[in-house]
Length: 94
Image 1 (cartoon, one colour):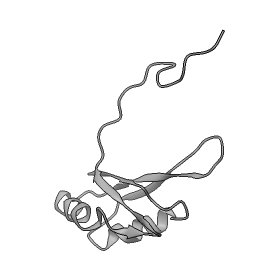
Image 2 (cartoon, rainbow, N blue to C red; image 1 turned 90 degrees about the vertical axis):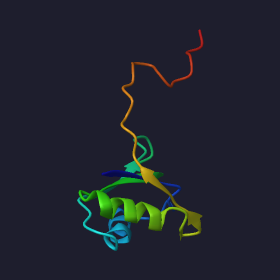
Image 3 (cartoon, rainbow, N blue to C red; image 1 turned 120 degrees about the horizontal axis):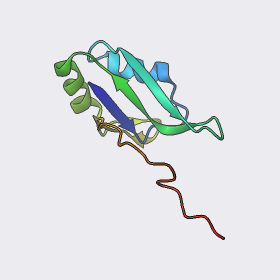
């Protein structure tokens, strides 16, 4: 199961994220989303857990807990919507 983790402290590392979820089962992958322009963490990431029951237990246990002064938002990740070119950008000015 792919798990979305939002409202993370910007100083949190992928290793710390993996360690947090490892308390509830085996973590296949933990990754942070990085801003392409600045190279800084955007404050959210994803954790992959292969066992559904472990993943659900982790979501229940970690959602709403405080890390680095911020309350984490944790839920099952939704599939990524396909994007068309230019979507989500403000219109260009003439």
